[in-house]
Length: 228
Image (tube, rainbow, N blue to C red; front, top):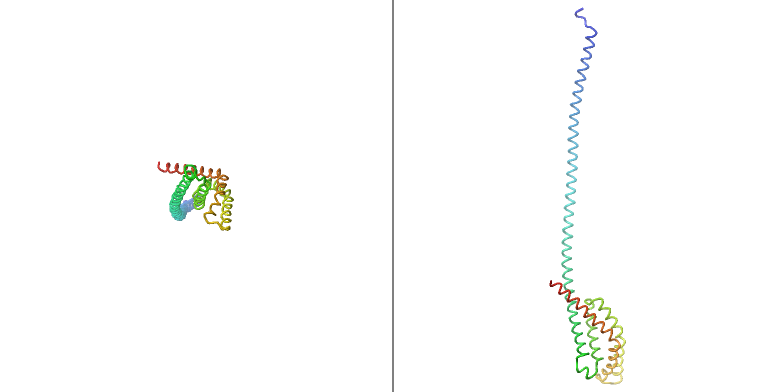
């Protein structure tokens, strides 16, 4: 029959319909996949952009804090450096003044012990020696901060050794006053002990004078260096 549908026509129609649906479904799935991929990509980019901005903000804050602390520390160091420089300059000035005075006493000592005709005539070297020792002691004790460690040590040795002679001289004077002697007569009792002081501590006094000369040479070298 011409109008009758053959088995092969039915099978062809079914296959055709299935194939069309498959194409439709495939096309729709491809469309949805592209939409979701674009959406996911945009969400991912947005998230990373947000995280990047957050990180940049944190780094900016950290950098600003670092700059602030660095500037503060630099200012503190500059201020400390200025104070330290001023303190050093004052210290050096006082040290120089101290050694100038020590040189004056040293020159008086040398003049009195070796050049003064009156001392030689009266043979009162002990009294001249004692007078110089007392002047040295006054300066070295008052200006102890400004003398070298080496000078402090050699003077300490001299002071300890000289102490027993000075006590003896003080006692001799006190006994004379107690016995009714005039002040000038009592003072005369000190001279023999001063002679013993000079004899007993002469080497130690020489150590002090040599150290003063050494320290002055170092100061002079430092001053010459600063002028360069």
